[in-house]
Amino acid sequence: MIRQVGVLTGGGDCPGLNAVIRAVTKSLILQNNVRVIGFEDGFDGLICRKPVDLSYDAVSGILQTGGTILGTSNKANPFRHAVEKNGKLEYEDRSKEVLDYVHELKLDALVCIGGDGTMAISKKLIEIGVPVVGVPKTIDNDIYHTDMTFGYDTAVSIAADAIDRVHTTAQSHHRVMLVEVMGRYAGWLTLSAGIAGGADIILLPELEYDLDVVCERCIARSHKGRRFSIIAVSEGAKPIGGKHVVSRIVEDSPDQIRLGGIAIKLGNDIEDQTGLETRATVLGHLQRGGSPTAFDRVLATRYGVAAAELVARGEFNQMVALQGNEIVSVPISEVGGKTRTVPLDSSLIAAAKAVGTSMGV
Ligand code: F6P
Image (cartoon, rainbow, N blue to C red; front, side, top):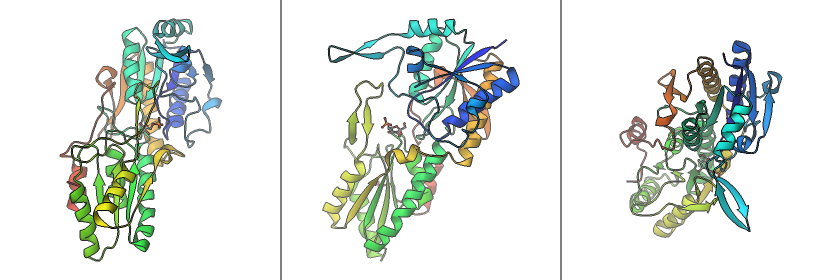
């Protein structure tokens, strides 16, 4: 018999988080008469004891809203909690206190909504005895064993719209326009947005690009009378033998590297080599903002309901996942801390190539 369930959102925010919180909460209240407790700011809410009562009313009217009503953190980690001592950051293991808190609250389960980092922490919480159910979130779509994370479809739409929009300036000014798309070390978002936005060249982290090939394609287009080119470039893309462009190091984050700036570097390289005028747009956090698409609202609701069902059946330590069009569950132990990249034999890459898009190699 399940009576009390905790919910938290971890890692970067993402469209559809509120839709999942709503679905988990409403479903547990309506189907199982369970009390649902949210925790603010991801795992920080468990470490620093920040509970929020999630009543039916508290989660009404949030389906279409972006962000997370609970707040989130991509730094909080019960096993490596940063504290400042004498101006220096030191790390403490607070997992025992978190376990005590879970027992004190008499939580029967904890629903962790997040990406690979959240699943990696969930895996360790499971090992010390916290019953967890996971829900896969990220615009990067890079979580193992699920065909799609919620938030991805919204980000693809935003990035594709941006690529559409730079076409007019590119055409009018005869420029090479570069659009930098998020995704860390996985190219899903760039690939889908590039195809949907009709990019001429798509550059992914999975395929180191050849600057000569990229430049030749831009020149060839202008010789054919197409006096502009559009390049969709992943923030994790790099030239053959080159390095990632890092925008900042976040010292107290488990994943310290933040990528960003390759579009500007590559734009300068193309201009130097070809003489063509270039401009770069870095889309950044616009891609994570605002209201989720209808597709993501549906997926988030299916995920939330499936997570509540796992909890009600006592099937813990599983993450809900989409495989084909079926919602299934997979062991969290097989998911955490891994990155699902685009396979080089992906049908998406083949489709892009078949319509003449260059992959820069
Ligand atoms: O994982 C989601 C994501 O938006 C990545 O695509 C991006 O590299 C990163 O998070 C940015 O992190 P932050 O919000 O800390 O700048």
